[in-house]
Length: 307
Image (cartoon, rainbow, N blue to C red; front, side, top):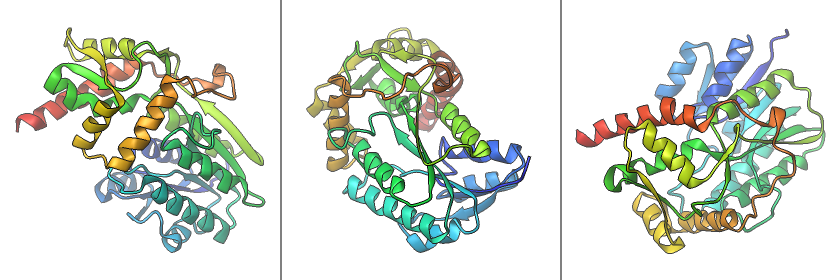
């Protein structure tokens, strides 16, 4: 096995840290790019080279971070408080493209989303569609778009609502079957592609977990994991859901984009271009996530509330 040098964006996030750790285990050199210095220091202790920045839209800084690497894991970090979410995505996306060009990067794994083939009507995923197009236009670049499904970790946003009301509340239809994936599985799959670097040209790979779940099923599993037998799912109107998101810190524009995404889900617009079977399925079930990830986080958050 030859040692390769990688730059990993979002290295302190739920997906990025898994990518970094897996590539280090394979004996590669990894430049971990992230915002949280404490988390970066933890990756440094594991052998990563760290690059701390909060300015992912800064072409000069990204060019420095991508210097002399063979491949990049890139993403558009979400910002729920952004005044103009899509404008921020555009600025970061263009900086990534220029940094890739400046360093003649040959391989990129780009974190995207199911439904990114749609040019609009998908809320924040519209920005991921545009980023795929930007990367596809770079001459000589081998890029793999890893289109992940609905994150299981999205339910972290329901913790305070469960604590306050005993309910999970979103604008999603209760009976809608949604492909869900654990971010750990996404990180593992991204690291697998980066380790091999056997993709050529513009490659699409759609990815989800072992099976789909309705919001009712997911709520029942979460309820059991946290030993609360009475947690129920409640579908909110789009206006109610928007108000709830803004109360949790989202800007009005971001909340509007999320409502557009919920509508796309509810109207079955989140179609796939590949059959989600075999290697397109992760290993972590929602039951495992609920027991081993969500429940500990729920109880830790509960302790913080008491303090």
